[in-house]
Image 1: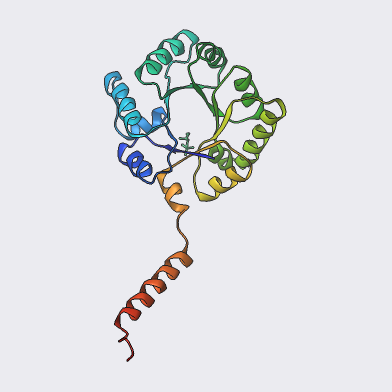
Image 2: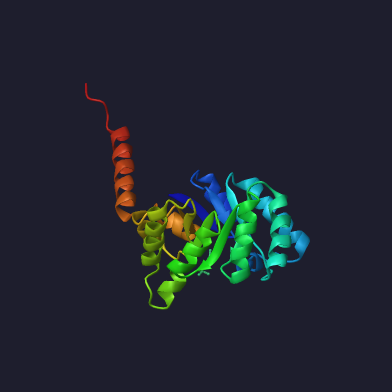
Length: 223
Ligand code: G3P
């Protein structure tokens, strides 16, 4: 499973990339706003800055909701850097835009996926990735990971090359469950990625190893 980080924070992207486990980045307008990035020039520059940190796909979302606007914005985003993936919302004009970009060989990420039917349409339209939002489904008492499993199964039935990119991940168990059901990618907050490496028995075990090593260094050699 590929690991993407779901943030527009350059510091967090660097920290995850330095771990050597990062395959890409996803952003959205809310995450850009959280970092205080606004104004077209600054937004475009920020995407390039992200591409220069990580060697992998970087999703950049269009703001337009009409076909012509999405095409215009998407082409501008795609021209910024070869790693840019144009993120398109799952709406009617978005499906048309997915087909347009797919025919032009431009990678896309279809976002705001909440049902298997939406994921099927996005795959038919040639999306590179679909982003089902599992945490937001859990928030409304619907099992988000079940949706990931359903979409993986449907894509396998027909050999669709579209990759299932599990999004709206809130904690480490989401990551494990996505891996269990065969998600191709999980895009996670840094806290969830770092959460994976924690276990109290690791800390206790390391403390003992180091204490035993220290003791052995003080023991005088016999004879
Ligand atoms: O990638 C989509 C993600 O950013 C949404 O996450 O936590 O706002 O539901 P969240």
